Image (cartoon, rainbow, N blue to C red; front, side):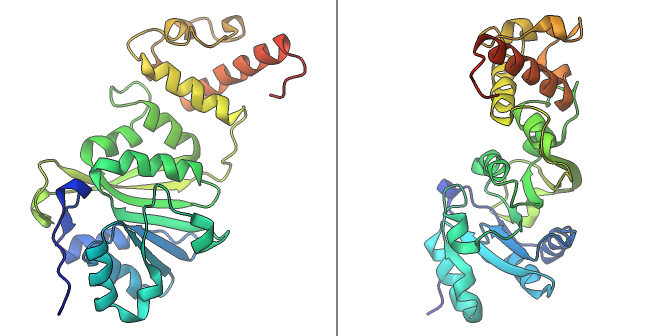
Length: 270
């Protein structure tokens, strides 16, 4: 008896049912030579997986939290059983499965956790040179938006600090089962060659999140809980709202926060 897979609303599943779109997504991986392993998040019925498996440049792994999808894929691809893993990308033990190798991440991401997937990638960025993913259109725009746009926010700044983001193409609802009520967009994130920020990175994350938590306020007000030496920054900066600032602007602010902390606590590491 063949296992059947029904999309589960609780898991945010919308299965891709168009082979041409699946081929286009798979073909969007650049394979820049830094990796030969590809991890697909939420392979579901394997529409995208098939094209990734056929590409001899890559060694494919699939992670899914749905036991029925895992059973279905095990039956369909018996020779790949050890690469089809019941696991949650947001919490699984990466090194136990893949060691220290460089890995691309790809998938028709469940929309209810797509932002969390990006945050997990950012934590593992030293191991993930490339991401190709399908997102709800609004989330894709948030990740890719430049400073000054109303979509620009925490996700934009933190992703663009370490990756070059490109919107590739939109995908219509009718190619999914069930059809989502939203438009979808595929984007590609390529890790920057220099992925080290010229500041304390933990502090940088804190500054960005604090600034955007009160995004309607000026920086001087939204960053009140953090000591910033504004005198050492451009005169107009504290009067700006956070969405006007580039990644480099946030790096500058972070450096001044660290300088001030080091001045007040000379023994403290920056």
